[in-house]
Image (cartoon, rainbow, N blue to C red; front, top):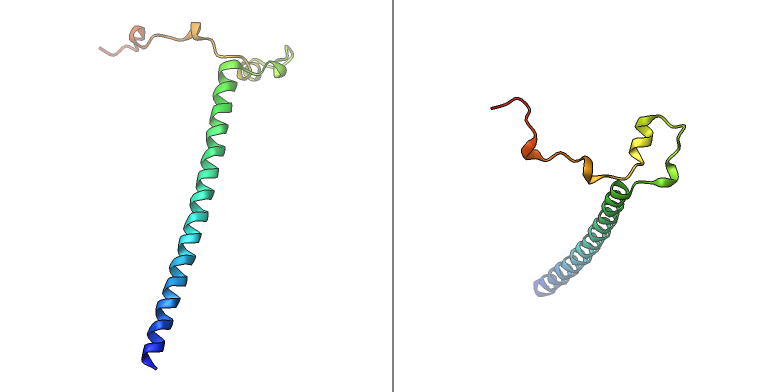
Length: 88
């Protein structure tokens, strides 16, 4: 009788390990999908920052809202080597 109980324990452990492996696989797939969504969102934000959103440009908007939709211009970037904030 004890040999049968030992066999049942091993079968139960095998099923438990299989279940945990499957659960782990689903968790990894979910994390991968979420990472893909975040990466795409990040790419869209960079594109919006670089190119702006001309459809939302409206002369009647206040300057703060208007500036959010303008494309980024490298000509206005300050060279960090030329920036002096009064520190020696």
